[in-house]
Length: 196
Image (spheres, rainbow, N blue to C red):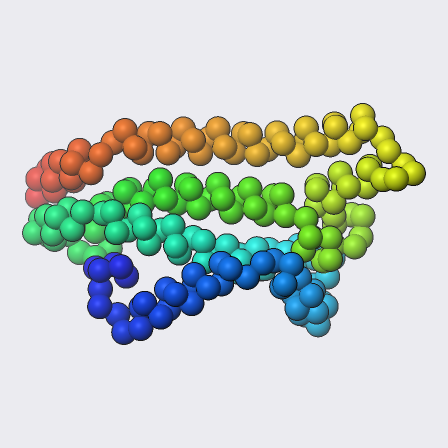
């Protein structure tokens, strides 16, 4: 059914290549990404950061979600297949609800790494109107010009969205762990009986 269980040709090589991309530091990619953004006209454009952020976070997401997909019991999939679920219903009603904690973990990690990223944003965003919040905070700390009051106010402003996002996501993860696969299967079976 899913990638970890199917015998796909070259899946181990693909997975190992994805794992190898996790070992490449972002500092090694800043100059090529900046040159690419310059050629494509994406300097001082938010898409010049969005596209690299997506590409750099895909290996982490694949690694985490593959581990969560291995944890989905095969018996649940077989029971849903016996009850007449097609592949779309299997994913939407059985597999996806069980993957929600993994998706939330990936969302938290992606949000935090993109929100706090400094080096690529420093090389990509040069105008004052397009700078990200960590770059703005850096302007208020220097050797000859230091304004700690403004700097601490900006750091608090930077922290507030992260705290709100983490509180919302933590509640979702806790709710998902309270509801186990057996209860989900019973709800699915009851839904199938009622719809028949």
